[in-house]
Length: 510
Image (cartoon, rainbow, N blue to C red; front, side, top):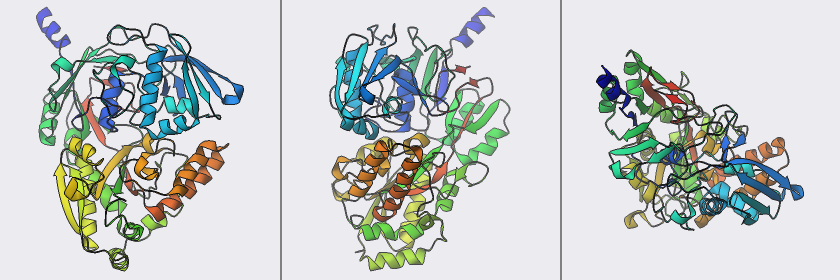
């Protein structure tokens, strides 16, 4: 009997992710799967609580001087990287500057930053050109890429250069030697991790109490195989269940089904503003009467009721105080494919094929892509659907060339709720041209409004600015919102998840 007990105790906690990790450095891979991996291995200076308010995490706190132009912070004592080396202020400086150069929120911080000074091993100071009250929120950013702190010696100045080793100071160590790319990723509890004292568990704030000794991610692309493994007890947690399998798993004893995270995912269609035909704003706007969020969300979740999905969603997450109905009639009025086709002809669509790239290993995104492809054909466009794995899509979307040169014309994707909560982290609403994210819209109005949002002195003023930003989007079409959906997660009833705000492996009893 002792032998049996020891064997059970030594079994790893097995998790099936919704996609292959593909890229190990979470700062270079702006995707939710990279964020989940990053939150295991790394920590951040601030964390977000359940009310989406930033709270000190790696730092003891901050003192603010000179009318908000100087922020002095000090690291908590006893913070160690997985190598055993202490976390120092110079690591903070190198990590934050690398993250900020490639992040929309970080870029705004850089615009206000005069200097980030290292005072001693644990103390650093932000010296700002002007007040930046959003600083703690930037350091607590929970949308990908997060401002993770890594050893300065293992990272370069440029975000595009991957880390030499995946080493952080977070609650788990990444075991590269036991990892099989595309199949298995292995983590073990970090015995040197010192949880922050006090505060309740939220998104990434409060104590991160770890009781699981070893976690194995097993990539199982086939949903039927993943469902069978969960029912047989071979895996403990399946990140995102296909909607068709939810009723089956609900009927099984010992399995719990619930939303994978509180704020869900926001789907959108991204058009390439650099390449024809979508370099013409008239052709982009012609799509508006044809976008059907009900069709999209039904394809993704099987229904739009029962809390599974929301339609009538604009450019901001429906849970955000920035969400509004400005110009939303372009998506909520009765859908009219004939009107869209007529506008497409008026715009002079030349009949050239539209290359729509999509991943076969991410069912929700594939479903949105298929519905989008059918919609484009219905209004008279030639569509070239090109299938690939999710990692390849993430890499290919950075190609600015024509489809013949390995580029693209359109893709569907989904971001987590916090990604679209406000202009601060909203990558898809950037319109800074070739300096911006894939899609590369160029609209100075949107960029000016975004800066005005940072400078606003009240919530009411910020909300008014966001109404104007949404109105501008219907003209330039930086993104086409496809709705909000809440993927269902499945795990064994013997497991207690203390943190349901986000996919996390702390506050987890198994």
